[in-house]
Length: 372
Image (cartoon, rainbow, N blue to C red; front, side, top):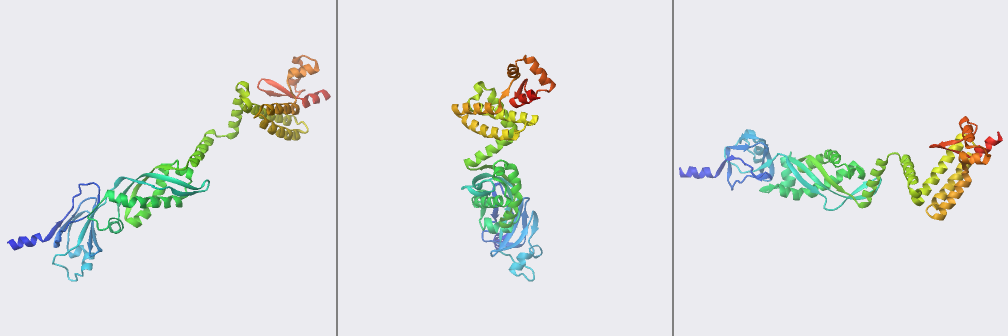
């Protein structure tokens, strides 16, 4: 009886593993140099897979359930041990349990900047970090490339091993996707979703894992790129640049004192534009030439407006070129009441341009009326 009890202790008749750690990826069943009994029971729980290894070669793989180890259900191991006619004797093999549930909230990040090629900015240095979720989908490949023969391979070891590999795959996927840097630095959620189909085939083929979600929490770029992003956002907020410039010019004219040199430059530009429009509408000969003259003088005036003397010179040039008259000026020149001038303007005999609530008449329009 003592001999029978001794022999029973030398054989393994039940193989199972209960994981209470919540962070174990793979676990090698401790055989204590014992052999596995013919007909032994292998118990694999949910979210587990059992992998046999014999003399460094992968044997059979078992999913969740209770399995009786016989020749019929371990064909690979049978072939490896050359059991031609079945086996009745105990055997030795390593049994690895792997956890197949989803491991969430694993951090990744670039220790050094990665280089991105962008059409707008050329080569850009960027740093990135975030989290990812993963699970084991190929037990053999995971044991071969990641865990090895470790007795108890835990999540912290995986993080140290895989962090640099994940960053390398992220960099390659980002480069192949050709996503603009402006989008990389502002659309994190969409970036992670776009990169996931590029990352998964690589990690599954190399390491036997599948990424459930890949989250980019932050991408930092050099200050000059951040400034470019801010400028682009500002332009998008402005919308129509032409309307925005007009609005800014009008605000400058409303300011006390005309807004200084900048306000004076704005007034000159608006004056030139109004005069040009009046001359074109009235069909005055030489309007195109006047337009060119006004453009040249306007440019000089705007430049000079940054200094007091330049502003005066620009204003004088504008006055000489345009010679705009009010109804009161025309009445004074003609020696008639201003009401009479308003009457011929209303009848269309004297061409005039209404600006707000006031009328302005060019010298050429007055000369044309007097010659008629």
